[in-house]
Image 1 (cartoon, each protein chain N blue to C red):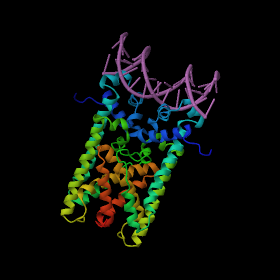
Image 2 (image 1 turned 90 degrees about the vertical axis):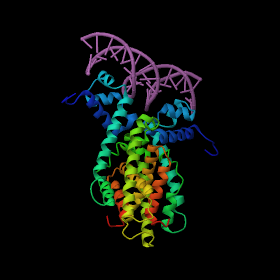
Image 3 (image 1 turned 135 degrees about the horizontal axis):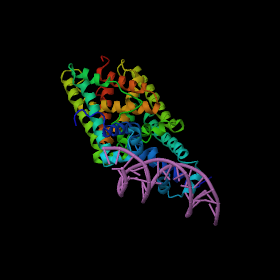
Image 4 (image 1 turned 180 degrees about the vertical axis):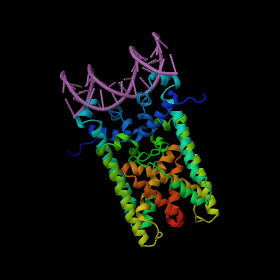
Length: 192
Length: 192
DNA sequence: GTCTATATACCGATAGAC
DNA sequence: GTCTATCGGTATATAGAC
């Protein structure tokens, strides 16, 4: 509908996105979702077929969101390598973890194609986009010719995801900064 | 006791370690632990004060185990950089994830110092050990002088942990290989 | 040391009134 | 569309017999 304001459905989705990020699929109980959304049981089961359907839609939206954030850095004008570095320097909440990457450890998510779809889609897109840019950077002689874009792009994404793991394990956001500084130095040869 | 064979206590610990790896702390229920160990309720609550105590001991053992595996690669003879690369090439079950790193996303683990202790201890030790080796490699001019060992060591560990995330998200173990090949190429300048 | 029985809470979903 | 009542199942732990 036009000009509708925030509906119960919206509130349920927001609540689910937040709880999936904080506690994962197993930890996001319908009761907690409803409570956070300030909505009753009936409303939730009216708008969605259950926890799973809610989670599929929530994850799809979250993956889309962070893809747009990545594109904002990757699609800016300038040399290809600068754009990769700009993406690495995007602000991240290291202690909260990646709202998409954290789902990879939830066995219920990994085992369910509908739940894993948005997760796989995001990482497939991101690694491929970075591969293109690194290919471009290599052609422009911004990175060494021996560096395989298909491998380095995956290493870049892995560094970010691992940065979240370390920051949370050590309860120290500077682990993320160190990981990113390390990979930027490796990529740019000290010129970044 | 001497020559005791496998006790119920041992079986409970093994079972807990496996379930923590597969399903995390939230997903490892006492009932499942007992069933897998082929042990009754009473036995479990006789040997341990509950799920938490069991998990603390299980995680401590697991962290110790993978530390020993890492040391086997890092402490071999030869140039420092070769040993770092040897560690990166250690065999890993990419689709299962890291039994220690995966705990970083479990909010109940992160919030509990006794549970997080082994996780933090492992990563603190590993990044520090790699930092020493990279310092040595830099002194020996095996890596470029502009590379800060404190950052690159964290980036190396992050690449491994992120490799697990990507392999699971894409359900493809080659994501781990690609990430490792990428970071090895960045480190060695194509000579690795 | 190990077992079965029991307890309290929460999980995820359904039923049916309004 | 939203609410409350209710359900069968599971999570985590305790009690007490043997």
